[in-house]
Length: 153
Image 1 (cartoon, one colour):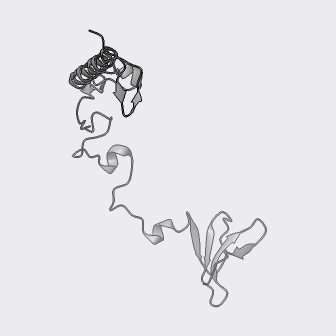
Image 2: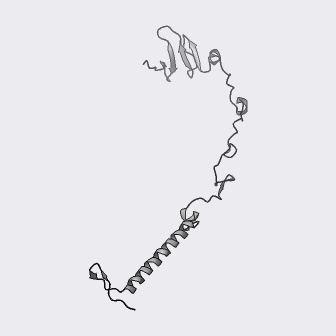
């Protein structure tokens, strides 16, 4: 049975009830498909097909120093080639002087400096001139003994 044009709101729509019902059925079918697709999408494990390669990320199966990247990593001294915290050397092991090593001031005299009121013959030494009022630390500049400049601030 055919119907004539439907009067919707005072004007003719130009459509029959069959056409309108078909449009409603199509809209309902589209809504059901969309709801089903949305549910499937939400339940999917990886709906967009994202991969490590697409992201340019390092896979969790990668290992560094035999340690997997799938969790927190704790590095040890051995992992980075460092000595363990309890490891130690003595000064003798590395060719250094022990902490209590020292030289007396007097034992350096004649090797690094000369102290006295007269200049040393060795011009390679520093001279600690002990002459009152004119003394002080002096060095030989190639032609004469001169005071080492000091700053008084």
